[in-house]
Amino acid sequence: MSAKKELAKEIHLLEEEIKILEVKRSRSQASLIEALISRATPDEDDIQFFRTFTAEIEVKRERLQNLVKQLEAML
Image (cartoon, rainbow, N blue to C red; front, side, top):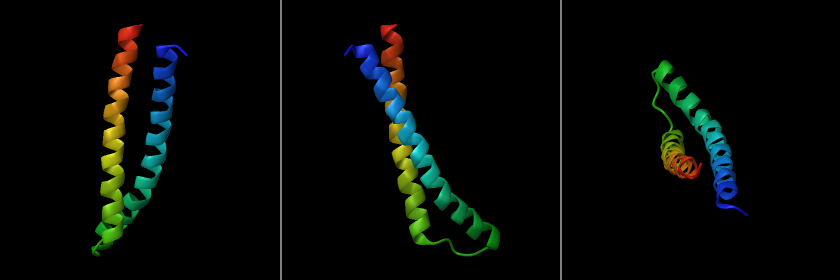
């Protein structure tokens, strides 16, 4: 398979992974916002999930940006 197709495929997969992680993060984010609004102490698990998913998303977005730049350089 050509390098362009491989990059495009990897870009698509990363975009899908980011969408899934964002959905998962939004669940913990909603719980954190509810705790904030209710002036309650947020659950430590929700905090950790939010931080973990956010870190994963940032890494994948950085990788995605690099792949897009590589693909644009090939075009």
